Image (cartoon, rainbow, N blue to C red; front, side, top):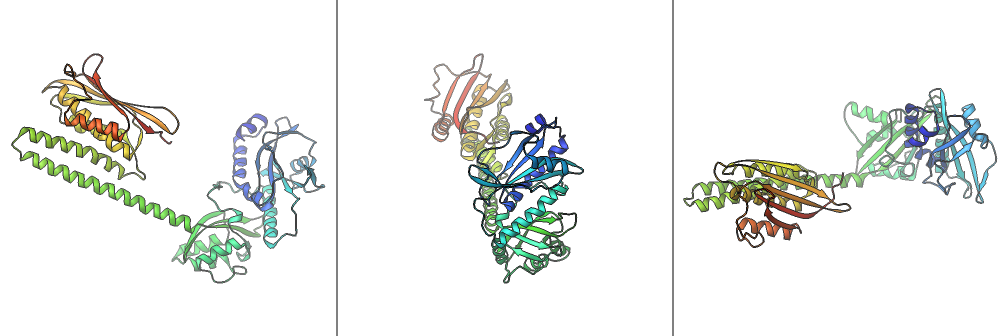
Length: 489
């Protein structure tokens, strides 16, 4: 719509914003009218109309099988559009049009903003299935007529009240028509069922909706008065009410077709099951986070016990083995600490990599600087945990065997994500400028525990490859390559 309006019309940004506000609301008008809606806006030179938006009803058959958006019509070809635009009134005159052997009643509703008519809504009703209307259909049509008059007068849609069409109740979910005093004139079967779930034992017709709602969902203090006013439809608002065994979402729309408040339209939806599932998910998420928090605490306790044990050992080799175990446990604890702060089983791994790098650098025998380039991005928990251990082992190996006491150097961790679709690949390179590999060293057959852990986790858990080669100039380069799920933004 933005492109069509800016290309063909003289409307400014504030006018365009009003049209967006209208389009966010007009599914309601379409459903209440049982009709297709097409928004026509005059072109800059005033010789044609361009259709910038279209809506089909959920409550009846469509009048247009084809998409009308982008069509241009010369002025004069559709006299009803001309009359609605020039005279600023709703035009209903004329006989039904026949389209592909289907009779269609056409009406034109001017779209007014303040003192100007921006365009015209063509309301097209398929008459092929017309029959004697029920009480519900008559209420729909009367409400649609009131809304159409408000659009023509510039009092609908409501400024600063843009509605989420997917989240808000629709006409078919439940509809209540109130008079000017807030008394129910009509309640659809779905609306009545929703109120029965709140605990209503009688009919709604003839009762004051605000007072009835407040009695079914009792609260204390001024909130009670606010609920009575909201449910009476005096202001355009959305709110939820909980009572009995149910939760209902309501949306009040004041009706002022000729500037006077004649009543209100209340749309409502039974959201009991939706809210119940949301609460279950919140409880589940809180439980999962608490489990990760407790696992992290337990791992830190294990690390503390290993550290105490290491201090009491006389054997330097045994003490170093326990300290390595402390670091391995610590890298897993970092992942669980991060997971305990998230709403899902995914983590931003860059922070974890930085913390692992800092933790391992503390044990360096020399003065080694560690840094990270590139992004690991968001990883699933089942990838983050083994990767944190692999990174710990590779960094620890680089610092212990690449640098002697007092030696200076650098260890750089580089992460590159690539690929497309559901699966991408993560290539992690750890490169140091230390002593390099011993002559004849084969990383795939080396027997020390750290490299065995790396091989097992990379190939078994991550489904990737691991290689350790001499760096181009000096030192050692370790390359990890494995598949990961593509990031969702």
